[in-house]
Every structure is written in structure tokens, then in C-alpha cells.
Image (cartoon, rainbow, N blue to C red; front, side):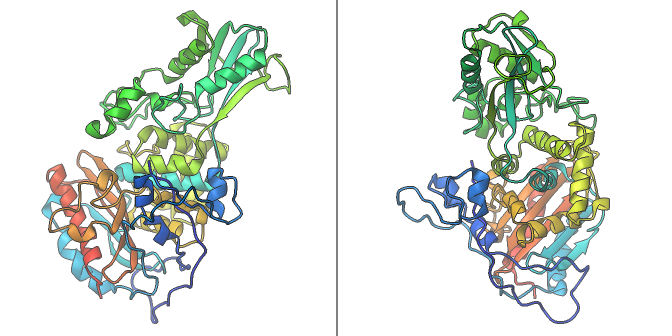
Length: 503
């Protein structure tokens, strides 16, 4: 599982070309050296110690967050998978990029709605646009917007609590879901390092003292509204990539997390999900407390908080906390985890005082992006994962978003880069960029992909042959060819940017 890299101190700003910028002006800010470090993936792959200086240490809960790197025993220095960008490399020209991309975006397999945006990360200048401001179905590329919104709203260090409180009657324990989709039953959970119910059960037994547990009440009221988004295709709830979204669940609602972990690569992370994740979690917790039988678990709500202590109704009996937000965003993007994405969207909603629902998450994400100065009129969401066909995002909003996350103006947003797949190397891009026509993108494209039937999208960063870091987004929602043909056509576009100086 990838680990977000450090955010190093800023370096010198690259020179800004003279004369009027090509295309629509974008935000201008200094490019941090962060992206150079972000592009070192071998640390996570090899399982070596990762240095996390500065704010990242605090976000991940490291004991030393003063800026001094803390390392495990010395290990051989791993080779960089990707070369770092050169902030002083020459800026591509609008004409140069147009010459490289115009023939490729007209590929018949991509259909008649191919919307593209290309911008320079360092200066924010728009370098190429084709329907760049047109809201388009983004599929899983939506997760970039969700990731930025939750990092801005909650902060990279935020952890989601799962609590147990005393119920109204002696021996009753209320399990209160806080919206952590990665919560595990025990050490064999799907997500390494996740909070665990067995740890919470141990706290509860200690807090109860001589009082024996008699019943578990499941409180998942933090989330509201439908558990499936109405715009999802009919096969999503049962197809293994989606699940009922409830405030209490274990292992992303997977029925058999150990098997899902073993078969993740073969199944592309699809797994059978339980129909009622909150009740399933409650039964698992009851078993840990020594209770048996379905009658010992029921839905309900926790007594109102009154500052009670001991075992009085509402008194806290224990709490466990999720991985920090920076890690949850990593997993969401690298694995394209739809359940985590929906939970993250609800965290945005809760942070903004909105209902923890599909509608609340969508409205809050739109609000946060607007507060960041992004063109909120170019995004309209129904969910946080991109499974809904009613979602719309413009390519230019995506390149604006990536530029903002990468230029150092908001260092907390740089966490979205840690999980981005690398062309020809990892994640959803692991098997792509290997053909001769696209090999220039191998190792220099980092991007989030999106796929629904008839919809193919990709957005991320690419380093040109001259070492200039660009951001790009290509969204198509009327593709004509096969999935492989459409993906290859998209890969040729980003590979053309990687293989030229475009001047």
C-alpha cells in the first residue's frame, strides 16, 4: 500500500516566460520540490523506511514532527522509479502542444466528446484546451476532487473515531459508527493498520468492570439517506465494487476480508459485500464481547451525551481511531476504492455541517472546492466515488485542482499524489504504457483513471522530455471502441506530452 511522501521545503520559483501566457490564465505560484519526492514510488514498493519530515510527520502521527527526519536502521538507497521534474526546464508552447495532440484527440475510438485540458504545474498556465470547460462524466477521476475536498475540510492528520458508550440499561453497549470504512474485526482485516473492534472490545470489558455485557446496540445514524446512490448502474450494489454505505462497517463491507485480500489482484479488487454492514459489524462486536445470538444485536441510538462517567448511560466505554486522512486518501486513489471514497465525501459533509449522505457529500465537496477558488460551476456531483453517471466535472477544473495541490500553495493537498498510479509500473496503470506507441509515458505519467461503459477518463501529471511538469485531464463519455482501444488512445495523448518538449 503506498505511503504519501514528504513535502519538502520550497525551492526557487522557475522563471516565468515573458509576454502574454497562452490560453486561459491560471493561478501562478511557486512549484515546491514536493513533486520530485512524490515521484519516488520504490520506497513503498520495497517496504523500506520512508522519511517524513515537516508536516507529514505530524499528519501520520510520527513522534518527531519538528522537521528532523527519523529513519529506521539504514537500508540501501532504492532507485527512483521516476525522475524529478526540472522547474527550470523550458515551457512548452501552445502551438507545440497543439501540433502533438490535435491528431490524437480526434481518434475515432474516443467518440465525439473528447474534452482535454493541459496546463503547466509551475506557472498554472493553460497550454491546451478542447472543450476544457465542459462538464463531462468523470467516472473514478471524481476521486481526485473527493480527495482534495476531504484533505481541505478535515486535514491530513484527522482520524475517524469508532466509539462504544454505555446504553440505557445495565450491560447494554452502544457501538457508535463514526464513518470509518476501514475498521477491522481483528488483525486479519483487509486494510493494514486499521482500527480494530477487538481492541475496542477489550476497552469495553475493562470499563464495565464486573458488569457483564448483555446487548449491543448499533448506532449508525451519523449517515443518512439512501445507502446506494440512485445514479449507480444496477449491477454496482452486487458487482463487488460498491456496497451499502453506512456509518458503521468493517473491511469496506467485504464478506470475507481475508479471501478478498488474497484475490485482490485477480479480481481487480472486486469482492462480495454484506447487505447490512452496520448490523454485521454489530454482530462481530457482540461476539467479541462474548454474546451470541441475533437477538443480542439491534439498531438504535446512543444516549445523549451528558458528561456521564463510569457505566452511566452515555458514558464512553472505549474508542478506536482510523488511519489518518492522508493514508485513507492514499488508499482511495491507489486502489480506486469506491467505499472509502463515499465515506470520505461524507466526512466533507460532516465537516461542513451538512447531512452525512450522498447529497450532503456532493454539496459539501462543491462548497469546499469553491472556497479553494476553483470554478465550482464546472462540477456537479451525485457521489464521491464516480460510480454515478450523473456526475459532471470539466477537464480544466481537474488541471486547476492538480496544479493547486502541486504548486505548494496548499501543502496539505499534496497527499493526493502519493497514491497516483505510475504508468507501466503500478495500480490501474501497471499494465499500460508498455506498447511502442505509448512507451514514452512509462515511468513519467502519474494519473487517476476512470472507467464506466462508454466512459473513459484519465487525469494526472506528466513530465515532458525537457523535464517540465505538466498536468493533464482527458475525459470522454461517448467512446466508440473497445475498452482496450479507448485506453490506448488516451495513453497516446499523455505519451505524446511525455515524448516531446512541445516547443
